[in-house]
Length: 522
Image: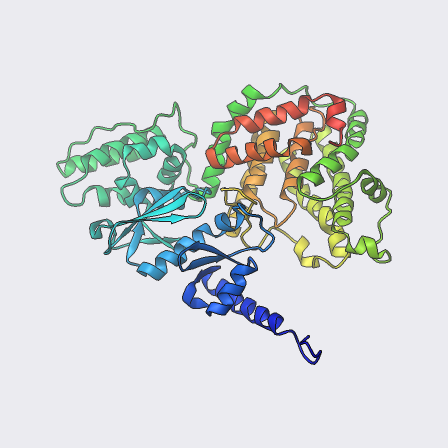
């Protein structure tokens, strides 16, 4: 109200107007804001309240007022939209990412890079410093901006085949997974030969690509490159640029970079898991005794798993909701309690997971069972929020319908249009994997890597891990909140650096913790 109490507070009116203006910009420019897009008053108000975060002089991104200093989430979440908006506003379409950066985007690399190289048709060389030690190197070279470009994430990039011809041998050693995926995305060697035969020909690149094709098992395509170049009087001697002992991808007709990445990760990681995880005891013979042990772990698991996600959970709350002492319709405290809803949902989901485990213990294929049951787990996990009117019923229907970001992670979960195929592939990999340890560790991590839901991915991922541990006779394993940072660091190393060993060893340690420690609500 105004001082005399006759109307709305003018500061509130200004704030509402600024937020409306920001919402329009967010919808139009994906949260990338230039100074001139807002009035000085609106911009200062939004920056002061934390709704806008400065990136560089004259440029901003949308922020969350609750973010603490040093929180990287807003920047990593906005990185690609910012880069697209910034480059488009500066150069229109008169630019292109260099071949290396182009291939990383084409192949679904999900990590925010430290630096991206951009080639423009005019201007000067410049290093644009961005938040959290990221940057953009811009330099002019009209000959390195192709006439035909692809658009990935709103950015101008080289087409896959042309980029493969232009990258040096270091790309195949430093980014071997992306190189394999890019080769798999090339349907026919003619796509490469168009570039390899241009001008005076590219014998070194042709030798490299012929060797690469032979390494990944496409011997006919390798021979086609050699023979076609020979017909053009260019001598080519195939040379394998990879330093891998064997390819991580078998030849296939699959062209989705996300499915190819999942296959490559699984293939290259499975032996690491086997080497760093205890051998499976074997499927439990006494099903009821095993399920009883699972039930005994409920209190500890609920406390630790919910606490890892940031819920303020007490032993009393867990006990109360486990005994159905939760009534959102008639109890005002329960209706307003996010923590109570989370605890009740966890209790219901835990029960659904137990039933899935029973089916696994009688010999069902764990991949098929998880594929069929994980949606029910999710529905039970968030059913109380629907009952309380916090979520709409349709939000229980399926996977997320938009982007999502993991707090302070450089890993960007898969885009919505890749979710269905990627989840289908994940369950196929689980179903065909003979080692329970591999199913449990990689099933857990790759589910979180994909991040198919708007919320609950960590909890569902840990449920999945324990159901898959049961498929090898391992005990239900609690990831303790006291070790939350080690857990998050290990997940980040696997997602960003491609190193699954720390997560494998971490989960093995939690598996082998003394029962007292495993059950402690630390």
